[in-house]
Image (cartoon, rainbow, N blue to C red; front, side, top):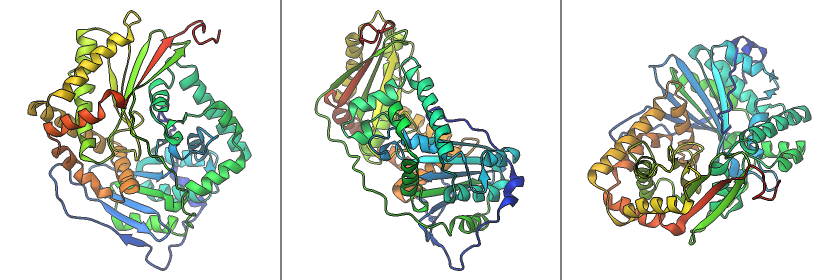
Amino acid sequence: MVNRLLAVLGAAALFACSEPVTPPDTDTTTDHTQTDSTVSGIQLDVQYHTLDNGLRVVLSRDASVPTATVAVYYGVGFRNEPRGRTGFAHLFEHLMFEGSENLPGGTMTNLIYNAGGVQNGSTRFDFTNYFEVVPRNALEAVIWAEADRMARPIIDEENLAAQGGVVENEVLVNVINQPYGGWIWIDLPMLANENWHNAHNFYGDLEDLRAATLDDVQAFFDTYYAVNNAVIVVVGDIDYDETLGWIEANFGNIEPGPPLPEIDISEPRQEEEKFGEIYDRLAPQPALGFGYHMPERGTPEYYAMAVLDQILVQGDDSLLNQRIVNEEGYASSVFGGINLLGNMYNYNGPMLWSAGMIHGDEYDHEVIMGDVDEVIEGLRTEEISQEQLDRAITKLRSQFYNIVDSSSRFGLADLLAVFAMFDDDPTRINRIEEGFDQVTPELVLATAQEYLRPTNRSVLRVIPDPDGTMSGEE
């Protein structure tokens, strides 16, 4: 999950334990392949198909690697959780690793591990994913295994009890018994957002996790883990026709689920600055975090905020690092970004641009925020130079290329999946740089004036409380 849930897995020999589903007689795909190129920079070959049952299929051949990466994304994340079942999306991610009808227990793990591959999974705001990186000759087996997991997972009381305990332990280790816990990635969004779907404890309240029943789990699966709410991406050293044929054969006969429930995830415009405090018995020093609501994803202002992110917090030369760390010495670093649980591309709803620091207890938070305000107000009152803009865009392009060109090709698979899921257009990956090219100093100034205004900000302090006396929890 948030800590990337390492699960190293394995073994192609077990493919023989079940035959693939026979392909339907009819053509099951609608071909959305696009070949036109409109931008400079990266230009990836992408094929996009939709099966008759609603499964979206994205394929991209990259013969420079001897592997294939398979990623299955379901359109369910933290925002989809029902009230009273916080942490449910994360819990279900764990349950889907517990085996399927033809791959019970750790059989899928052995399948992938013995083939020389790895696998992982995660839960985010708007999706849950499962992926494998394997040698090309294990690709058919992995596609079959993912189809079996989608169609026939083992969901029973034993697995629910076991994985409920695992998730509860994660909450204890990563949040409750961890200094600063979920301060900036759980608590700050809870302070900043008004809509419950964006503002609840998505890692899970222990009472909610313990109250989950098998009926709850089955209903969640039936609603959100349907084939028509999923995307499968395969990238790497693949043959298009062969790979699409395997996907049709194994996924094509899975029945689609009912229409998804409509959930309103919109946020009202924030008109007043918000403040919050957390008393932390484990924190050795105070911490200070703040977040601003982002422009809508994909708009010109969204790309301008990405430029502002680079200028303000990304790298030692960023303005807040220069002021807070190098000049004033309040903290050893300032961190932050757009979507701290992923990247600026892989979410689809209200989001914060956030920044934070752990600072010396001799420094008052109001003094620190005074320096922060001075830096930010400079960007709200005067245009940046073309040189600053060019440097920021160069860094953005570099980060984008690093995501796409990661050795596992998972970053590429991730972007293709979310662009298919959120935009119905995975070829958008070839046009991302157009968004950067539209940004001007004038647009950066206008974006800073609207989105970096104090009334759009939420500030959250962490106050050390080793004895529990300040919080009343001695």
